[in-house]
Image (spheres, rainbow, N blue to C red):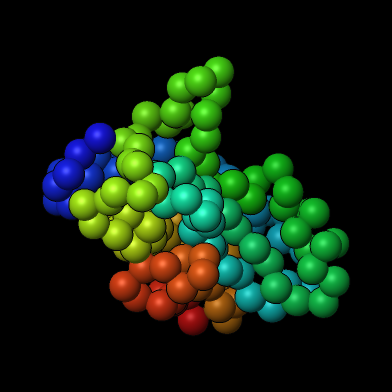
Length: 151
């Protein structure tokens, strides 16, 4: 655990950048599997209720019949996921006491993830011309409400 927001941001960004190739591969697979009718792509940083440092970065397609759209990309949707595997945090990121935090952990996670996704998207390019792509934090976490990556 770290008490310094700057140290945490650096650790988190370094960890996310180590997973850039995986995220790019998944985005390419989503592009190849993108169903007709997709009107918008939302990349959401999902956070648990307890702000302990766990999170998931997931792609959501918008358009008619959300279930069908998102099922078409289901195996590629998760761009990054922090979870417990056999009692160990994987990937290894600092965890926090949800009741005693030195700074807003969830806001920081979203802000850093948004910056990383901007870098990833600059390398990736675009899904399809004129398809809006945004990134946002779940439940309005992050100091920026939403960020456009395309259109």
